[in-house]
Amino acid sequence: MFAKIVAGMVALADAHEPLPHLKLVPTINAHVEAVVAPLTSVNVVGELPGSDPTLGSEAVVLSAHLDHLGTGTPDHGNGIFHGAMDDASGIATLLETANMFHTSKAKPRRSIVFIAVCAEEKGLLGSRYFAAHPSSHAGHLITDINTDMFLPLYPLRNLVGFGADESSLGDDARAVATKAGVTLVPDPQPDHLVFVRSDQYNFVRKGTPAIMLQMTPMPKTPEEATYKQWFSERYHGQADDLDQPVDLAAAEAYTRLVYQLAARVADEPAKPEWKKGSFFGKFAAEPLP
Image (tube, rainbow, N blue to C red; front, top):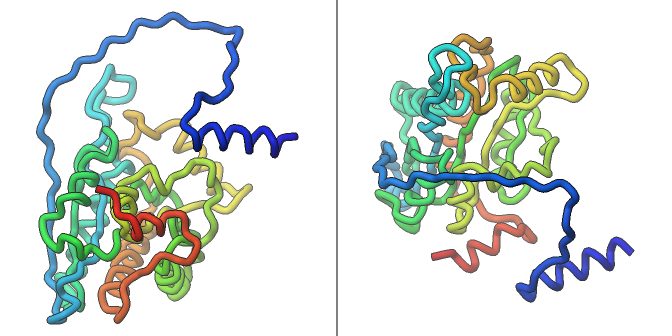
């Protein structure tokens, strides 16, 4: 019976017809006002040119978002939504990864593009614009490795690779993680649809394989309790500030792993490819405008 109901709803959706609905007993009356004003916000882009005469025209993108939620009525400190984890941590990783390439005097075969995108919290707007209008390497952005709120709250043992099962980039991430003694584990909350909710998705929509890495705890451990407490008390709150506990060793290990993954992909003979049967691979066959 359930299968028939689902099949019927899918058929209606495919035909762009209204879906069945029912009236709920509870009701609500609300008055909402919105103020609309034009604003200007910028992406910040840096590049390490590739050393290979041919592959240097292709680019590996490393991204993180530089915005958060602004200010509000103080409920913690001075009322500023600092966004220390979401996503100043990602920006710190982006900067330190660039510094690692610089200090190591690495000469990756492909170019590395470092981009701090704006307006993620307003609908992934900065990455949407950049993916459609890259400042360089138009048509040759081969992958995006995104860092958004990777949560160094405890020692780095396990990582979720959002999108890891969709392309060969996941195989690269798994190889780098294994070498570092870190396990790449399945998404413990697939119903949250994280892969389509952060900046990597705008690259995916253009047909570019992408991945977002995030630390994750094992179930029924003190680390899981810490993880859940963070989301309960600090996520998108003013308490996401520099006064919270941070595992700096985990942050350093994560950043080094991102560096190693970017270097590996930049030097490989073949660029990342979508895996056969990946839903997202269809965007590569039929790129969106």
